[in-house]
Amino acid sequence: MAVSARRRRTGIAAWGFALPFTVLFAVFMLVPVASSLYMAFTDMRGRDLRSPWAVNFVGFDNFAEALADPKFQQAAGNTLYFVGVAMPLTLAIALLLAVLLNSGLAWFRSVFRVGFYAPVVTSIVAVAVVWRFLLQPDFGLVNSALGVVGIDGPRWLTDEVWAMPSLIVMATWRNVGYSMVILLAGLQGIPRDVYEASAIDGAGPVRQFWSVTVPLLRPTLLFCAVITGIGYLQFFEEPFVMTQGGPLGATNSVAYEIFNQFGFGNYGLSAAMSYILFVAIVILSYLQFRLLRTEK
Amino acid sequence: MATATRSRPLAPRALLLNVALLVGLVASVGPLVWMVVSSVKPEGEIRQFPPTLIPDEVTWSNYTELFAQLSFPRYFLNSVVVALAVTVGSVLFSAMVGYALAKLDFPGKRTLFALVMGTLMVPGMVTFVPLFVLVANLDLINTYAALILPFLAAPFGVFLMRQFMLDVPDELLDAARVDGAGEFRTFFRIVLPQARPALATLGILTFLGSWNNFLWPLVAVQSADKYTLPVALALYSTGQNTVQYGLLVAGATVIVLPILVVFLVLQRHIVQGISTTGLK
Image (cartoon, rainbow over all chains, first blue to last red; front, side):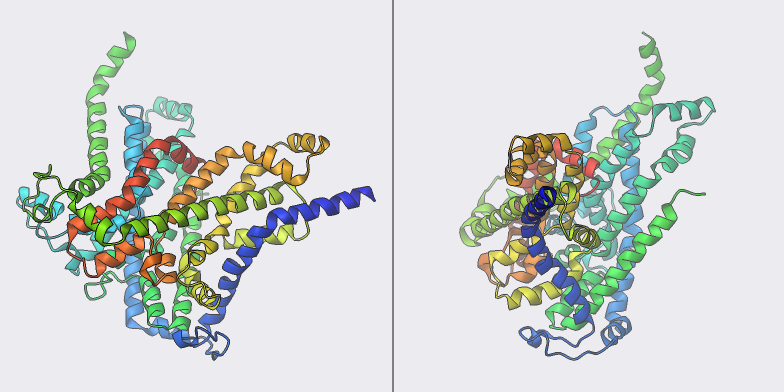
């Protein structure tokens, strides 16, 4: 009797702790998640904002429309291009920096670590503005530096070929530090004697990197790849600030297209596109788990 | 003696490695230094080719224009208010529910935890359209509430706090209860002080996330008096001030520099927090 009364009392207290979060979570997370699925199958538009229930179900029409839309196809291709280049590039540079920092030969380890991590804490909007200035073709720092060595730099952000690589370099610059810090922590978890043993077996530093470091770091690499990939699949601020998706849609991303369709008032279509992006995120995470899983 | 002879053949390798790291450091920090340097150049010098690495003339005119003519004090205040409210609220609520999930029994606990875990990976890109419809129907568009409330329910914070609370020793809680402390007293006097490192880590990450947040403030606010700094800068930079680079990099500096200073002060904490939680 006393036990059950006590349990009920702690149950009430526990709900007291859980309640503020739970109410907000239900309203601002569960309701939107559920209603985005609902909206994706309706023809909801901006004028239905105040009467979200007075709309028609259209089945998979929004999904079909999105997938058949050349602009969306281009945005999807651009997004794959961005993720496909920026993610491996980010991980490779992060791993290189982490290995260099962990080698015991670096002189000012903490200075380097802080410096490499600094871009991660910056606002993407702010640094996108700064990069637009750096890449300005006539007086920007990049083309000025190229001019010193006699190279006539392209008009980076208004050139169909160079616009996307420009965004990729900027995103890599901003995100390398995050993976580097995590990989560094992973490297410090590899016992020294594993390296000593492989050195006795005659392995040089390059051989050690491929046959000791990379296999033992697999789970950490996987984690960084998933987190980086999920972020990159949603890239939005970079084209918004730097190119407005141009030139000729060359840097339009799926996220930017979702935002634009929302802006045009096509809420149903926009919600459907969001779900396509979400499915892509889930698939990418799954593929990475498969690819980077310890080899049997 | 032995180390000296051993390190000599290594010296060229060490030099090479440190040069490589230095090149990386310049690439990493260079754009941020360039941002600050350029923000104090007059507009004419900014368009000079080749650019001056050290300003010939230092001027605050970009900043005076931002703060005297373009309502940046207002945007700055909005960003501070929103980031502080989101940080305090979401850390407190996450700690409370994390404690309940880790240490207490209540009906619905497993369901709540499953829902939190299920939404951990749902990105803002997927929910912003229905969230906008919801917030519009609650008549909260253009309010601080719209900018704050959705971020008080942060699944990641709950996950982090629950993980941490699991490690708080039960004996400590039992001792407090034996002494007659109620559940709330136990939480505020015993549990929260124990959780200080986790609270600090989550607090810093939440503040950063809110300060740099862009998509939702862009959507939820249409009147300029509620703009946060990133929204204001993005709209200026794509609108009437597209080519006023002096003004724009000064605006970028206003957003980035306070965060960089805080980061330098707390860097040990932040970097350790990132590598132990493994999430941003």
